[in-house]
Length: 393
Image (spheres, rainbow, N blue to C red):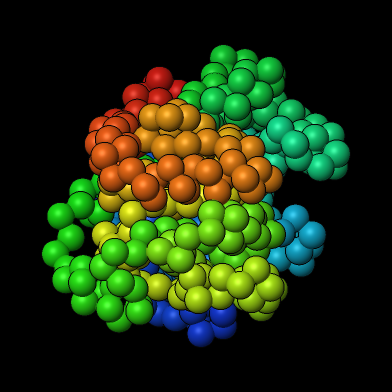
């Protein structure tokens, strides 16, 4: 379908990490991810001409290999304090919105939600939809988040026709907001994951374990995510040490500023031979196949993709009892949930699962069944129903 001015226009906006210059300037075709793909495909099916903000310098020149989409340089990153980038994001979106009449803006995440709703209100876009991937005023959040950021969300809600949340805690919070007349709150099962991509992976498990210096009788735990404070890897490493079992081997996939600090902690606790810092990995699906347990002691999540990947791979989960995690598994069914700083609790859960293959298999089957609800096909169907109701298509 070609892009014509008389067509109904739809714009999708989120935010992401600020790319390196080489990536930002790349002219390679752009592939949509699961955050945007279900929404964009539904909009196209409904006859909309789709525009999308991406963080690329020459966005308008890029080809989309996932769907028929026209790009612009969004310049929307993750920091509220990056005033220069946020002003550029505002200016760029205003240029797009003033260049043609838009029927819908679907904005996502805090910065995308802010820029999208401010610009949408100013240009009188007919419908504004906002997806919260995790409100910043979650239980236990700093006072600033629970006051200033919450007030900002309450104000912007008044400009919003639909708010979509991804977990029960955020859904209950959003229901207290006052939206535009006729506005509604929806809750969906995450951004969607291709569950079958993580199943029936054809690999030589013994060879991959050997390449990572793992023995066949080792109990392998795995985590994926940036090495930052929010992911709380310190508790994971302390729990491995507290479990006091040399058969436990812990794979940490990710990179970040806390790497050296975490390495020193492992050394201080005499578990440096059991903790494997693998850095960025492109073979996560394969690594999940050689693991026995997914360990996730994170402080804060919205709807954690890494945990959904682990569940899709059939791994039992030991996770912090926080928003998002509790929406995926029930304690004692699919895994165990612990208070975020409970080292002994995590250690006990590790010991229980490490010593009980039958229980691991039971949790495996439970997670493979539960995760079906979070499959991208189901999410797309839910988005389709929401769009039909909100947009009156």
